[in-house]
Length: 132
Image (cartoon, rainbow, N blue to C red; front, side, top):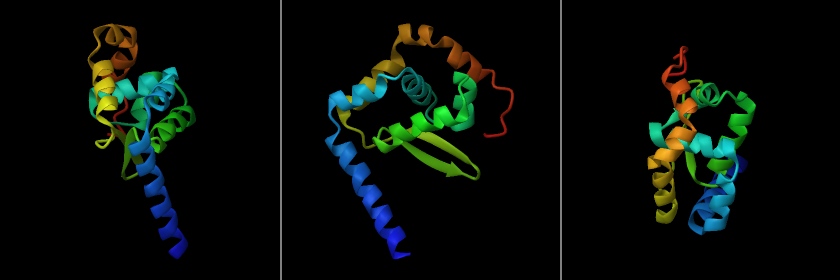
């Protein structure tokens, strides 16, 4: 029990430090991977998505999507929320202002909407809403 408490405190401090100390080169390195960028764009546009919705929209395997989401969560860019058996991801509210502006700019970019239009269309036309 005590070990679990200290592990949670360690993880909270670690995440807090990553958020507070995140530098632009770390943030852009995180977004240099196309799968992470596509996940972030969809989450930013929708306000939050579960793993099953992202795997369907991106047409990627669940382990691959989950691994990339975990990296963004560990960096402090995303937060997760468990609802029953499903895990939903949202943009963290405490990211640096400059990072929020970059995400908002990516979200609002018309050329990126066209570039990743198929991801959005697959999300809109998702047949199985079992995770919602």
